[in-house]
Length: 288
Length: 153
Image (cartoon, rainbow over all chains, first blue to last red; front, side):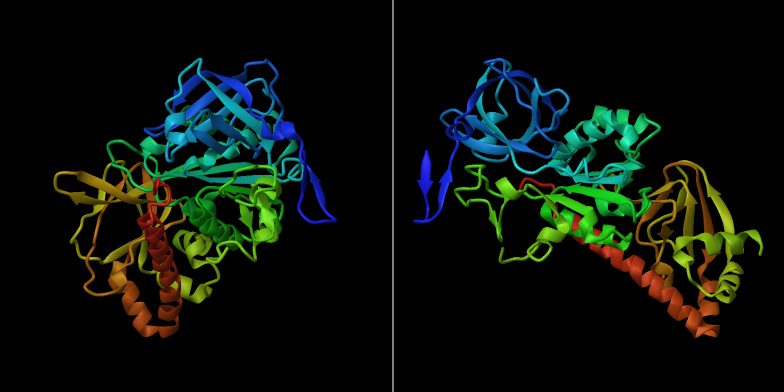
């Protein structure tokens, strides 16, 4: 298929990028009251490899398509894992899928966390709410290449203890001797929670890393990311040491339709992961 | 330099403060330990102390009839607890309870206020630092008011 935009400019669109591949639900895990993790396998048996931070388009036949970050282990490409929160017209019915149901998958798409560039550095990973899902593949990657990185701090903020994702894994990671894991919630009752209460930014001063040799990976609501960046800057991080994952209304996922335009970027193609200095001028701007 | 002077000088809250002032403040401080579950103060108590937490964890709580105690914030190593000693009506507005064995430096607020009156520059330095803490807590509260992790649909 050839799409002509201007007389001199032609874009070749690989038609298979627009065609969903059927995947079967292999398993479902309820994470919170409205968030579920799906394990999918290709009906044809051919999975795909992906990089931490990338996303796919999940197509619920007859309903619609949504971009969802991959939250599984990049070293296990045969199983496609997505954590989905039931908040919209597609994700609500999507979260009702059961084992054996079929849905369409396109992808993987987009940029990835800088796992290669961060080699030799400390890492600080700051996640808020379901923002932990796009970061989990990066954590899996770090754990399977642990010797390549320095100190690793995972800082996670959730609304309440019941809204935390991947509780079992967080506990496992926390039990390791080579990783700092700090969790906080916005509100809790003393009889149900003995951990931290407060916003995720309050964890940053407690994280162990060398500000001159650290890479920060940040994902969560945009407001949370804004304040997280301020706090990281207070610790001495430069803008080019901070990476964020942006969320916009992605439709085609290949940089053609323009629904996810973010200043001069398309989030689906140039993002979702951006080095902060490359978007600093437009980040948090009301008009963008 | 005795133990309290040294602990104060090492604490991030007093980083960069003139050693002369550290010595003055140290005269108003003592080391304390709170057992797990122990209440450090209760809502409405006179606010005549504040603390620098050296280790452990403290929960600031408010009791709502019908809902029980609600945790507002937790404070841990390196945090400062209490700023109502600095402004009238000098009353505690929450309950504070140790969630685990907690060690802290406790300051006599009357003594500190006296030192600040004698040495206005010390007062200015202290209030600059406490203003920062108050600002941080206000910002954190505003962020939580936004309920940023809610679904908002």
